Length: 154
View (cartoon, rainbow, N blue to C red):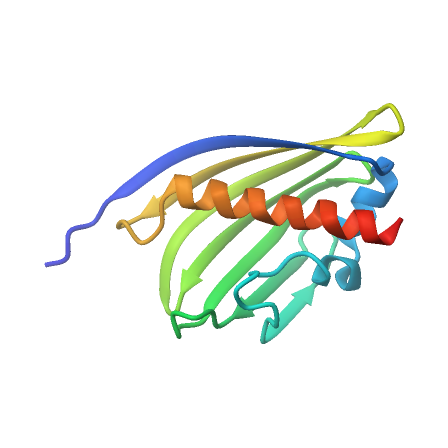
């Protein structure tokens, strides 16, 4: 019998972008804009990206990184306040193995002429397939990619 485990973790990541909340929100909510930054840098061509940005809408991002097995990000938008807040729940799968389930909240706070983004993730990580530290690191890289996309869009 395979030993099962779950690790619960919460982390908060903050970034300040030199763009108004409306521009940051657009980069989070528009499918074409999000495709420019929400990807694995080791596999920049996802095989599937679908996004229905509305409360109850779903987002799917699937790709095959260098480990050779498909990775799936399957999200459901739970709460959206334009230019202020996005809350979604998501599962992450490596092949057919669910490695985690999380609740993520993104807050956009006007700060001078820019935006402070505060992302809080509450996750359950299953059976040692992924870790909170790895997820926090990867999420930080995604938020850095968002910053780079905002810089080139200005």
